[in-house]
Image 1 (spheres, rainbow, N blue to C red):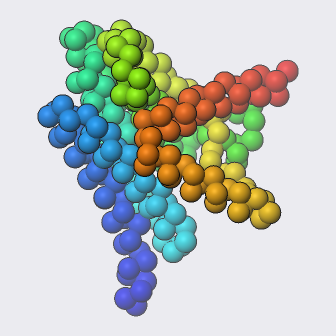
Image 2: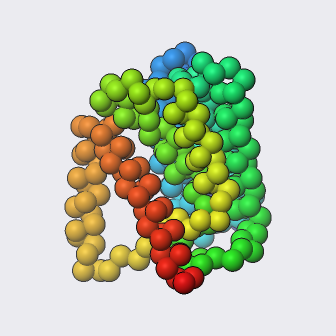
Length: 241
């Protein structure tokens, strides 16, 4: 095997390990109550998670081992880390009830990822499975569970730190992960060649917005994603009727 082939084989897995390391290190900073750094590390894990798949496709080095490693990484970075952060930030005030919600989210994340890895999508999908996911993917679920925290950081509204609100949010998003509701898949969206310049411009604007107003940008992005769930559910009901 040539040196180039060896590099191609291991690059995606190395990036996956960077994602895992970022997510796990987030827990360390959450324990120290350095909330912002903990969130930055989860966001960094999201970036690595995107690029490990991108490199695997470009280098044609995807493997069963890589898929299993990716799922384990996602479980830590988008299942354990964000739910533990929310527990320490808010729901720990409810004692065992708050921990129960955290445990429920982690269990749902593991079930979601096990289903995804095993590829057992034997469900009565109401819309095209090539364009939509079944249930909320774990990285998106991580963003949704942290949405109250983003709002609190941006607007300093104490209501969003309320332990009961975050308890309900944690449980609800856990259900979203293991549900059969269709959710939009950005990976499946095909961009028309004539819109590529516009899409690139939007991407640049989004990057600038993240740097200058990170919390507000994340609020807008995940609020739009949440609304897209209602849209796909509506399309699903409309398709069945």
